[in-house]
Each structure stands twice: as structure tokens, then as C-alpha cells.
Amino acid sequence: MLRNTSAIDGYFIAASDGHLGTVSDFLFDDVSWLVRWLVVDTGNWLSGRKVLLPAFALGHLDAERREFAVRLTMQQVKDGPDIDTRRPVSRQIEANIYDYYGWSPYWSTGLYMGGYGFGYGGGAIAPLPLQGSSRREEDIAAARRSDDDPHLRSIEAITGYHIHASDGEIGHVDDFLIEDADWSIHYLIVDTKNWWPGKKVLVSPRSIQEIDWTDNLVNINVDRQKVRDSPAYDASAIVDRDYEKQFHSYYDGLRSGILP
Image (cartoon, rainbow, N blue to C red; front, top):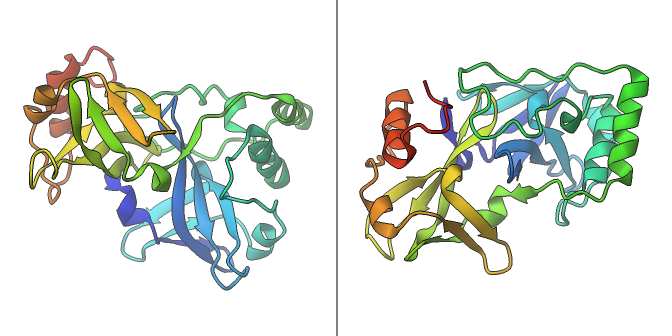
């Protein structure tokens, strides 16, 4: 099911022996458009410290209780790597977290380049199995030596960025729609009030040509009229499979092959 990230923001993270804190941000990979980490604000429990938890480690989303369960204890999280979430998250920082918990890093599984819509059929990404210790240690060591940019970006930071079509601005990023089964980002919700009053539209990551982190811009490869004539988006309605088929048929004729 597609959900607004703004609606999940503030959900509790329930460890096996108590609440760890609340979701305060999401870090996604701008190559695959998969959410890799949730930033958890621990509040008074750890004096405002924030921790990172990989999206695959979370259990089922409980909308009624507004929480996720995670198979960790509060002490495990307390003793985990200390992360400054105000600074970019490097591959080495990611490797340290995976190493501490004994999990296999996602970049060693082939999921790193999984791409938009991975697992569209609805199957959740289960926690990655622990590899043989030697293989996992090799992956961790390689990550610590690597200078590769993991392309992790903050949803909180990008919210508010201006959206530029090929012939001018159309609005700003208002929210994101993610698939809660696999944490793939399906759409950016764009508020067009300064161009098309009272309307919001959806933009697919496939349309994004470049994200300009210096000027706070998201550049897309379609013109304003194409966006304006796209299937109507009703923020009060659920974006279902029929809508998605109509949306992608309009933009690209399903040329990606993701939808049947």
C-alpha cells in the first residue's frame, strides 16, 4: 500500500522491551529510490540522540497503534554506533551499523541497484540473511575502504525543494508516496499553488533528470503542460493499482516494464 511519508513521520518504534523513539526522517538512495534508513529520535530516553535503523529490519506497520516493531532490545540500540544524523551518512557509517548488529549490508546482495518499484508484486523485503562471517567481514571491510558515494538523501531535507519542468517551475515538493511493502518511493507529491492554485500533482522518480542539492531544485524531463494534463491526483483518495497504470501509461506507455 502506498503511504505518505508525512503520515509515517512520528510513528513509534517498538523494541522487544519498550519504545525506542519515533520516526523523524527517512534516508533514501537517489539511484534506486529505495528508503534505506529510518532516522529515529529517541527523545528523553537517550537525551535527544538519534539513531539509524535499516528499513528492512522493521516489522509490519501498525497504522492503528502508529508504530513499527523491531526485533531489537533497547540496550542493543543504546550500545550501538553513535551517529551524527546532521552530517552526510557515509558508506563507512552504514558499514559500522551493519557490522554492529551482525546484518548483511544491502550492497552485497544485489538489492542496491534494485531500482524504482522493486518488489511491486507486494512481497515485503525480509531482513537479509546473515552471510558467512568471512564474506560479511569482506563486505564491511571493502565498504570502509571505499570512497563511493552511497547517494543517501534526506526526505525531510528535500521536502520544500522547487520542482522545475523543462520549461519552468511548477511548484515544490510537498510529500512522498512510498510502498510500505518494500520501501520504494513511487511518487513525489508536488504542491503547485504558485502556478496552478489549489492543485497537487504526482511526479514519478523516473521523470527526475537531476536533483540540484546546491540550489534546492528537482529538475524533471517533461514540460509544464504534460504535468498539468496528467491524471488528476486526489489527496483524499488512495492511489491504487488502476491509477498507477493510468499514470504510467500517460507518461511512458509502461516502457519500463515494471507494471504488467
